[in-house]
Length: 116
Image (cartoon, rainbow, N blue to C red; front, top):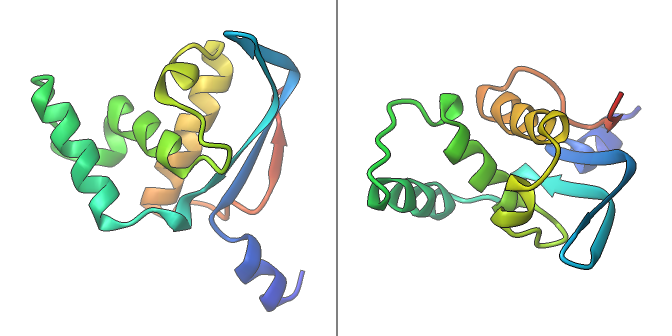
């Protein structure tokens, strides 16, 4: 993959479900996330929301509540938080892990991962 192609896909994650996930009448075959679209304001809003719930955190990359809210904001389909919280645990953890990896800069997120 050339540098231009890599630049276009860096920070993008597409989560494909083995079987479609259904929630409140809507079916999801995949969910796409663009971590690069997030801004500092998103981070502050997430922190304020968690603080209002009495949840204190030291490092956002290690807080599940922060990471899944980050995923909701990065969703290209506008997937609400309640949908992400209703996912099967394996899918939830995979998406949360991709958010964490992005924050920590641990891996390139240009792949499509099929839940296996």
